Image 1 (cartoon, helix red, strand yellow):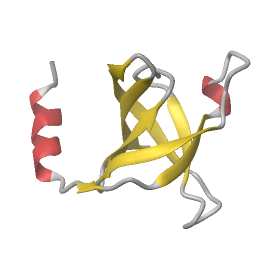
Image 2 (spheres, helix red, strand yellow; image 1 turned 135 degrees about the horizontal axis):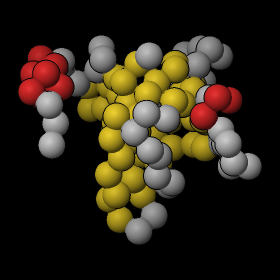
Image 3 (tube, one colour; image 1 turned 135 degrees about the vertical axis):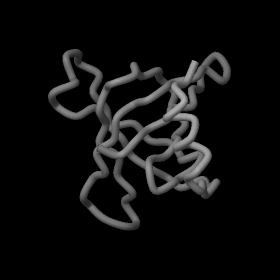
Image 4 (cartoon, helix red, strand yellow; image 1 turned 180 degrees about the horizontal axis):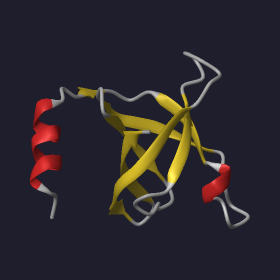
Length: 99
């Protein structure tokens, strides 16, 4: 269950529902296995506080990712995984907040 503070913040932020191609990978400090990315998929939504992405692999809350919008900048957005929800056998929706 979400905390009251998180729920309030979620309601106050306007979300833009959009499907933008992104590239993402684990930040080096969170990469302890051989599979650190990069992976490619699309966003589900973007707000001032974070974004949602679709992923073919799960992520753990607290993990940090570098997310690249290649058509905008070569610099990554550093984000933290807040939640990860399985949609079907090979797809997850991941909630991210900006660090």
